Length: 168
Image (cartoon, rainbow, N blue to C red; front, side):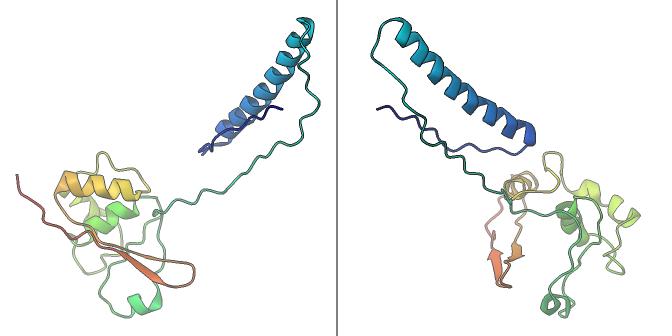
């Protein structure tokens, strides 16, 4: 008896998924070809059956931002935050720039943000930004970023990145 196993694969696109399906089909066909070649050589090797092929697919939901989301009411009521109303995927950029713009209507994105966008280096930051992008941003700009995020059950989580930033 011979078994074949494979490891988990990380697939993000439809074309990569299709490629993975073709890879597994190719492996199955190679096994059938191997059996045929062995029979031609007079081997007693035989493939009785392929009992099962298990193919698990899980949805990937990365933690990250995108466009404008309303704040939970208990945060909004504190009037201590600026929630920029963006309609693209640059929410991290606007969040980092919000403290630099005129506080009157800072939630409105326009020339007020364009005027200050050169204060930080966003060159290697993806949009939407991942946690890895936040770490890159902190190192590049010598700043510390704290992140609050809400879970489905309403529980609030906090990623505290407070650390000493050394001037070079």
